[in-house]
Length: 275
Image 1: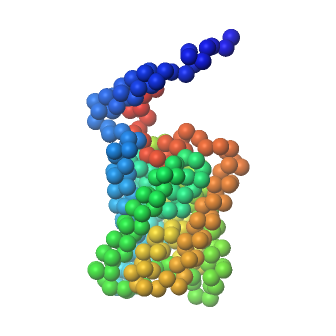
Image 2: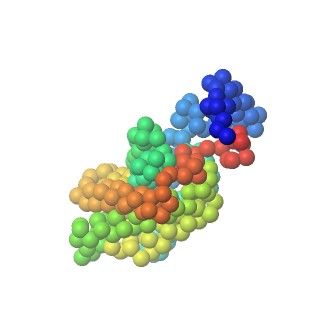
Image 3: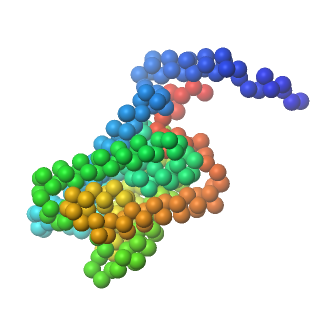
């Protein structure tokens, strides 16, 4: 038997009461409701801070290696960003999703796990964090090691570097979307998967394209060293790869999932949400 519509859809008064009850529950638990628009600044701060740390580590490994020869191996340079991303997901993924990458933000939006109205703010926050990191490295070490810039390897032309960045980012975003399973952007196990993928991609592909997979990670050092000649590779490649990954995710899993939406936007842990 089909129930009347009024018995299926809660009234506006009921929905308002549920919202108020949910807020009170969160206040009692001490966990802020990061879905509230008033808390968007927290999410933006988390993106700026997380991207700052990522660029400091990813670009800084090359800078420090050049400034102090023999102290940092190529393997260390590519593993360090993976470990950093893993740590960021664990300690503040629940705040804003820990995207740290415009390609990831766009992918979540195209996947319909993330509202487009919030995309500009996230990307601006990421750019601010990346530029601040590059400025910090320059103030500390000058432009040693090309300020940690990602460039095509010796003998690698722009087309091949672009294709490599597309491939690597497709794999990265596929890993992120495929493991999105909870409030910490991609969940605890997902943090290991994404961090491991970043390290693995760098271990075999860094000599080809630098294994950036992140427009901000490449743009920030290029801007501060005043050389944007190859920057387009590391903007176009990751964005195209992200879109391909979204298409693959539709093929594999169909439409957007609730878990993916929680992962992309960052929410209080499930035990604090009203059932």
